[in-house]
Image 1: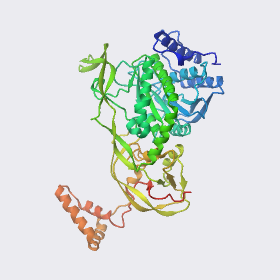
Image 2 (image 1 turned 90 degrees about the horizontal axis):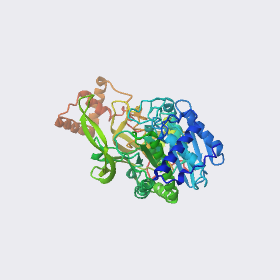
Image 3 (image 1 turned 90 degrees about the vertical axis):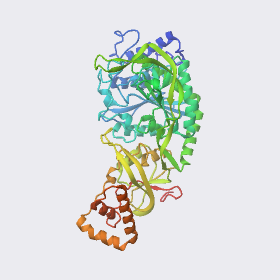
Length: 594
């Protein structure tokens, strides 16, 4: 049905304004043909200001799959929180050496990628030379279906079109681009399963920006190279990412890094965006996929944003195919290097002493008096564009590390953790019978949590831990998870409590921080006195702490003193603040493992 549409966008010179306009109008015409409800006749020649609904998007990919049955497949890969199925549209052979995955409408109010991916898929499928060889492409048509069904005109207050779009929150009012580790949504758990099965080498998440004003239509968040680390991170920064910027420039589209301004305007410098594993590309990095988040400029016309997003996909595909062998080699080297580590970085911070100069196409900014508030307001002057160097801070250093063990031991009680590990195709074997094992036990020495909820949780930071070898009771059916497997980095960054987006950070284990048994002071007084009499070493330590408290000027009440002794008695349960995931150190063998 679509086969007569053989307009070849891949070979257009996008630096030519006439050809570029033709390509844009063709893409818009395609959308109108696919979706009769979209009326271009009322639009100016600048193009349509409309994005399709979820139903229309799935209809478009259904038609593409019918028209090209030998080259494509449209499949459901799981459920969403709103009850509609999630879809994955694929092109090219599954055995291809390069695998590329595009995710759209994680924020449905930012639908540039929805339109761009349909037009791009059609251009690839109808090109005279056929689909590019050596690549298997997957497209998630609309990830946040619940938000996509909440169509409105106005919740993106600072955005220039389209006329209607979806809402940022999903059916549970979750921001799905904060949910890839905790998987509170059915969407995210389904995505984890799909991502692990698809196993992309390159991953793209399409967005529209918020923030400053500047000349470029498209900005880019690249997997942060320092956080990615290893041979893959260095190659991404030095070789592959420059290819994308030069490829866009050669086609007449200036692209700049995502404008994460330090001050009120980009003139004061910008920083890289640190996409930790809660974010889509940060999650992808746990599986050694290099990720790119396109951020089309909110104030540019919607058709221009769509065109720039589609152009990026074309440039990325071309660069990926040319570097396919090297990319696969770097991924293998990355995995090998990670397994060789004794400890891994699990949190990062910006190095404010490392700065480079970035060529930036901006607008002069000024402040004038507001007619609304009577205070000064920021205004960008489009009549005064500039191209100048600004400071670019893009070096991140590790702020916390965690051991890379031989294996983790996970009690079966933590079923919500096991569910997420299964979704990520984690390999494991089970303890065959009740037993006691000497394992590395982690105790949470210091932690803090947000006072207000963030994405359904009171996010917790683990500031200090203590590790020791202790005897641990295990039960038949508990999990032993070797780290030497494809999901190694995912395991370390979710199961190490210090990690920035660990399950511990997202409150999965908060119940272990609570003490269950206590004492009555008047009863325990006699026990405490007997303890001090019978244990001179304890009396000595008790006296030392008392002196320290007095020297520091802090009050140490009678109850606090008894509590200090209680925690050193046989009556104390020993489990509060004991992290419930245990480790087998690297120098030990894995039991029950063939």
